[in-house]
Length: 552
Image (cartoon, rainbow, N blue to C red; front, side, top):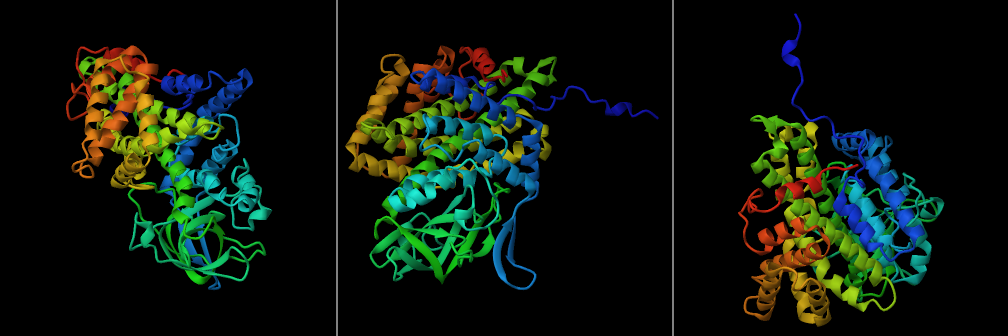
């Protein structure tokens, strides 16, 4: 008997074999915009680099690696067969392929290349759409560079290894490897984000700058990395240290992995608890008592990666939703042509483009901040990074959930890939300081660094007069900032408004009119409901959705 009931129809085809870079108008236009003054040779180089990475990210092979890495999570091996302590984490081969492709594509190499932060941010945005978990060691390795520069000798030794385009798995002395990865250990059980409450102690050894550590880390990222930046209490106060996994003579440093965290998502990545037994060798980075100041450059860089990672997840969720709606019909017409679904998709597209344009602006600012005479951009980043980290990462989860709903029951099934995105979506809001930490950091900058607010207001003021709703939102923000009464309790409200005003300013200046108009009407003008899909029906929503479609 023929299985006629199993004819497959009205299903979206697999979304494979497309160029994730060229298919994203907001991303490609943004990269070209920020490279407008660069030499033609550099623009061609970056375009070729990102197109190659975009094709790889959209390939069936990369998607299969992502699936395998998440369905086969890392396994902790504390001892070998003879009972010797080894403290190793085993990963599926797909993890190594994802991580290796990231490293060889230059995603840990931003600090010394022309337009390094812009091209690296765009690349991280692209490759994270293949699989997000392996981005943790990529991010930590990239972010360790500015912290190590507090000690020129250490930087000279380690920076070439960190920025290498060579990936070598396995634990060996760092000097014997073509490239290395870094992790970070700051938080402890009793303190969490309050790192000054850390109890891990550091005892000086005879040699200058060498210490032995005793204590624990409640969250230690990427435990199979070659080195870690950790905070510990030295005689002079909280201090930053470099802890290598393997010592130069080939012996293993005392680095006991107690367990791997069983997390909501991020399953492919290993997050661990570690113990230092009093013989753990470490090298001081920077001066004693200046640990937070030393490691804060690393934290700032990883916070930027939280913004990039969330923007990447949002774009991938949007892409899946639009693709499904283009190929699925209901009630006599394709979903994408039905007014209510068009409203939902347009709303998702606005959220994604606003996150993308802000991400690229931060990356371009970092490139400028690394140059001479760049105090304005450094001051801008001081407020823009925590504000963006707060808002973009918070918007990720509701957006991914709505995109999943666009696929209906199909989206709730693991094979669609949307459940993995949904489980991943809250991570960046928590990682490197949750929402309250970011809001308090903004307040701290507002109170102590007036040049940061001036730089922020100058940036959003570049669009003044172009949209009355943006102008009104800027005025309301200034009123909020002028009122110091109960400001901590209002911190989230203030930071949200700052992020929205900044996104609105960027879109008014750079996005197509229909995108800027819809964003300002809904996010700034108040003509918006409490859920996605409640945009004013009079807007040009069809053009907004068309812009979000894959074009390559």
